[in-house]
Image (tube, rainbow, N blue to C red):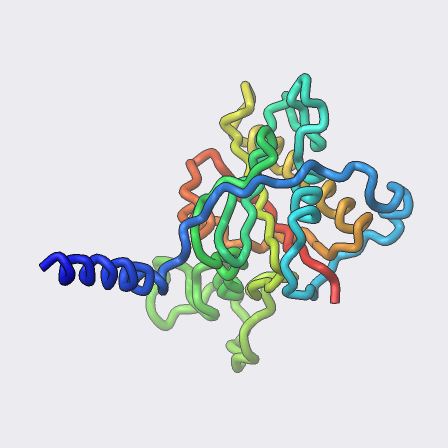
Length: 260
């Protein structure tokens, strides 16, 4: 009996890992390296070579490159005051960086210089926005009529119907998932602003996101990495995936990788 029980325990130990083999592995906290603050081109040279890149190697970034990238984007550069490499309205520090990689999604923690697990599995294909529906506007198929219009009716002054010529072009860079190994989604939490109307807070959040975006672009230009900012992202899908609140707004995405 004891031998059978022991055999059962051994088989269970073997089968459990196999049963979970098709599931995404549990993500763990990643401790980033201390940033190398002496690397890269001087600022004026970095500006002279800054350009938007649309094709990358799928090779994973080294831990040092990833660590330096995130610190340059919005890390803490004055530890005594906890202030950042990117300025923000009212020092709200409203911009969070979600890091999409092959194994999952992480949240950059500047205070600890770590990556906090958010969602397991390769979610990079969830970022790109689907191409809009054309003349009918986002969410409407091509040729759709405004709501409330009777069947067969045409809007006043509408031109004659033309034969479809294929799907209308989407926004530059939209609709096609990027295969860059690291993709940074920049999210502003407008609740961090102490005052102002919702419209003002949204504007400040967009401006703060742009400052972080420029840091990313300049770091990549200075170190030979490739990137570009993309606003054509699936905001509603990202809010659901990342479990964002109503005041957390995804504004931009930066694919980052080694250039081919």
